[in-house]
Length: 178
Image 1 (cartoon, rainbow, N blue to C red):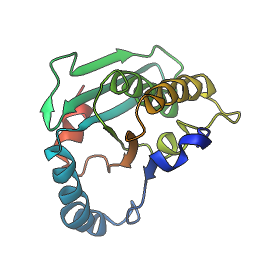
Image 2: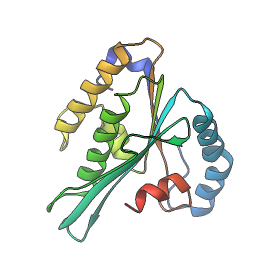
Image 3: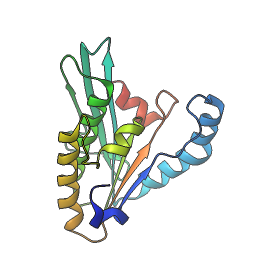
Image 4: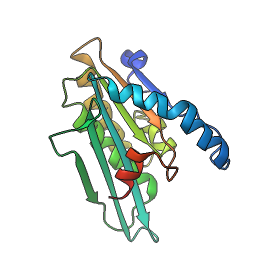
């Protein structure tokens, strides 16, 4: 992370079985992912956000979406946000857009913990990286929002989680339909 002062308060969790092994992924979802998600959803100190970005064709149609929850309940604020990204976008571009916008919304909350779920491992690994890369502008904005939010309360923490796409995780499937 490029937020070294806050490194202990930002967790990137992208551990999972090989994506090509559907049986192992399904077992991991049932025995590891879903129990962890249920615990996160039950804690009213949490802001939970599921994100997605997608591209149709060769980037001619693209967009991003996210849905946020407060302690398991959809937020009263715009719980679902989505936006077309225009032509010529790559999947990484719209996944990063979704992550950055989700972080900006989540850091407006006074809750203690932010949990963001994405099926983009690359996006999760680079959203707080300000070394030169294709979506550096979004990483800088995400770092700025995270730095401000984390500096307001020493008990705050940001968790970034990998969630497999199209494997029956209901909250992820919901945001994928937008």
